[in-house]
Image (cartoon, rainbow, N blue to C red):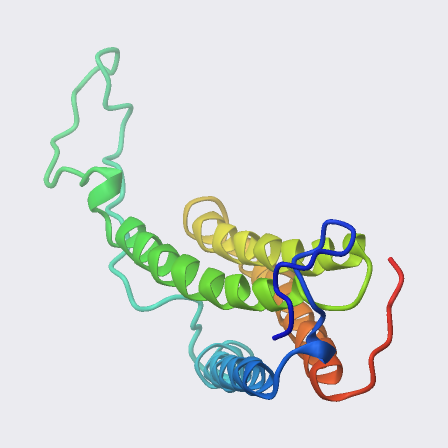
Length: 197
């Protein structure tokens, strides 16, 4: 990989075009494997979410969950004339199916999606382009992930219309992944060219 300790203007080391053949092969395989995973995720979203939601006869925003029990009629407080009979007590928020689903979804996706962009971000550090552009390419996918995860909580606990936040969140990290991949592969195997901020 050349002189890794050599720093140019506070940079990490040699740019991708100067990497050794094994380092280039490793970076290429990382990008290709992550791209296959992202394509699989896109296919799953199309088959599991988009087609049933927009073209199917059944609504499919979330897995089947039992709706939370309705509050009993009447005020149900000390000032009501008659205290309503409570047939079933409502479970605490952290025990509801909705909360458990959102928590599992967040847990799985925060690690999986962040892992992808931690690796891609590490490769972006070595791109031959301006510091500002590299900073945005590293930061934007994490913002997209946070928007995507927030949409899950908001659509469950605030309003189902927040389902639409999945689109800007997913598009943001998907587009940045494609841009990162293009520049990484181009600079690994193409001619070197410095890209300004």
